[in-house]
Length: 439
Image (cartoon, rainbow, N blue to C red; front, top):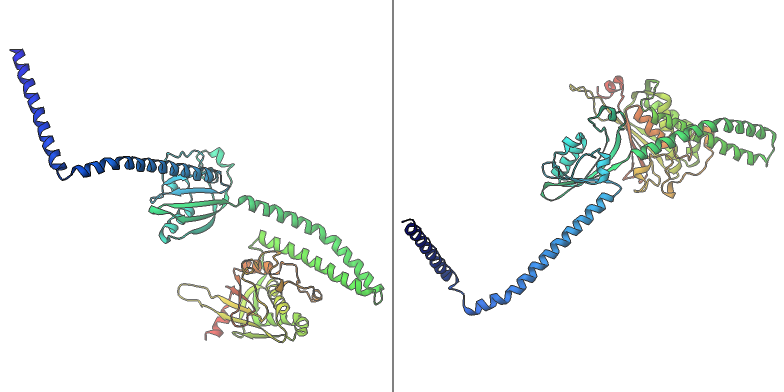
């Protein structure tokens, strides 16, 4: 009985399998019915070509993988940091430099986590979002304060000055190049400290040399005293250079330097500066033209602001064409309102000289920067009237003085005169100036 049941079940199973095969053959027959014997032969001929194409695709895939690995190796060896995030700001990859800069030594490539969880830098996160929104490369600089779970290790970690350049990538991804500028800043600080120490040491011997030269001036008769006079000019220039360097170093080290602020009438101050420089101006038949509110008062350190206009007008005189005018235009851009916004005084100083070259404009306020030969300083006998000549520090000092007062300065070329155009902005306008100007 058991054998009969087994045989019956086996027969049913075989019959079902045979029925499935018959149905499958019918389906394939209907599917392949449109194909002729000729097309079948063509299909057989195409098989080797398809195999060759598949082999080529596999080889291209291997080549692309090898190129990708090469680029990753290059980025990993690069002296700048690089990281890449996806559309959700998850860190996909970063090289060794980026891991060192951002203190990501414990991060592993297989870890996909939000960048902000790994690096507590909202400036970097904002730069990435800005790049993705604008779809244009962006740059940014900030001080990065690394975070660490170990309190003992945290005391040894230094803050870093970073510069980042980001670029948009496909599918919402963003790549960021990171530069650690802290070593350069440290070198600059050491250099400034060394120069300051040297300047302090030079003041005493230079003063002694000047006393000797003064004695020789009295005792020597013409024409020998001509060489002594030339020597006196050079000594004064060196003393001026040393003092300017010390002033600039002190200003940069302490931007909020102590200012003897008081009410200063602007036009009277500029007139006083021009009278000091008038012997130089008369040689080229130059004149000064002032336009702006009368009786304009600012709150400032009079000696420092005097130095600002002395340096600026001295440069304008040197580079102006003969028989032209130097223009000083003053205007108040805004007044106090309900929101408590402070007024801003804008002063434009324009000459008719050779102006700046486009390559020099971004660097004119850098110390010791020498630009186009057309604007190279020539040694003049202007030290006797207190002007700072040819030491490459005048505009740097001007900028630092204005920063200490909460102001700013910008260098341009004037479209009408073709000469240099210095635009100063100064916030400390006195109330009596406003009441007269807007009465």
